[in-house]
Length: 382
Image (cartoon, rainbow, N blue to C red):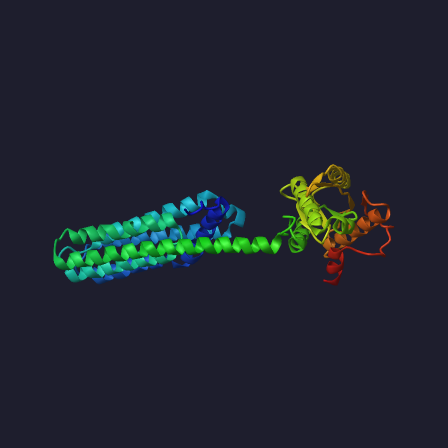
């Protein structure tokens, strides 16, 4: 039995489909009234002029309306685009356009000219094919639009009861079934592409062992936070005597400690904050919009939480402590994140030299010499 679709994937599919169809279609809105105008010109000698002019005029007005909607959508922020009202606006305007085309093609189709009936029907089938290509990734639109465009003309042809018209209508039915199947395949392909993209993005930004952001995601988030917040605090965290845990209990125990630290930091971090594993036993916590007192409070709270951790591994209760160095940045400089990283790393080294199991804030007089963390070394090398 097929597993239920992940709600987050379904939402991503919905947004991606809407982005795709609006982006593709907004520059092609003029095709609908142009095709209607060509049909009207072709059947003008035998057609109803009033109906043809009204049909072309309505399609022109609808195309302009949908073009303005598309422009507004594409100018909106990405977060704004995810709201449902955009999708329903698109869906409603699309159904109106399909209805006007389908009903209009039926009304302008000459009753006494087989050749002109075939011409109108050919353009109608072409519109069905175009709609299936442009809007096929949006399941609801594709499901309803194809019969709305096609059925009025097909039923009208069947009403004559003549072999030629019946064959024309039958061919249209077959095309509609094929277009609907193609739409389903397109949607399934897009769904799978989104799932794979999300999986690859997850692997590229998440540390597999701790479940936290990895060094790459940490650096990207840190740069973004420093560019968009007046104040940003960084806590650099190092598990004390981690090598001794590996040497005494094995690397499985060390991995269990890493996992426990990841769970603890994930619990502590708020949605707008970033907890990351940036080295073997090194972690980081980015706190935007806080002051020095709040930074100190977060560091001390983390110290206490780690001290209370009881980590079970093969019947052994492991305990650990951490050293924390933290710094606060308020200066809007080009290398703001790099400076914040260096300052918090110096504070971390000072905490380790002072005896570990403590948190120290960066101070200008801290010695810049000595070992630095893996993340700082890599940052300094660029």
